[in-house]
Length: 80
Figure 1 (spheres, helix red, strand yellow):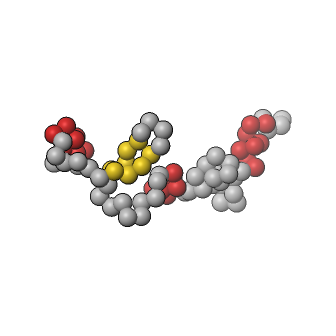
Figure 2 (cartoon, helix red, strand yellow):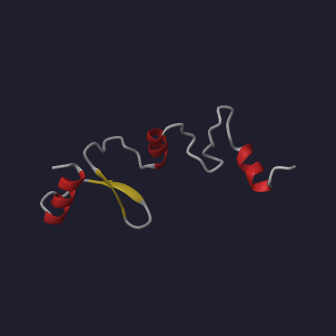
């Protein structure tokens, strides 16, 4: 029995430790945290910011706590 072509292509992109490489469509990570970090925008100098999107690209934004709706959502997310 032969390996289906699509599975063979995936196997070609798995490194020696069994991780799907970035060039093979993976993150090259072995944990959820390092996988997120590999895909998220740089976290350098973004402490306290929130991840947002414009519908195409992810980026970090400073929360606007003056906005009632956002403040309530933040309280719910962070258990406030």
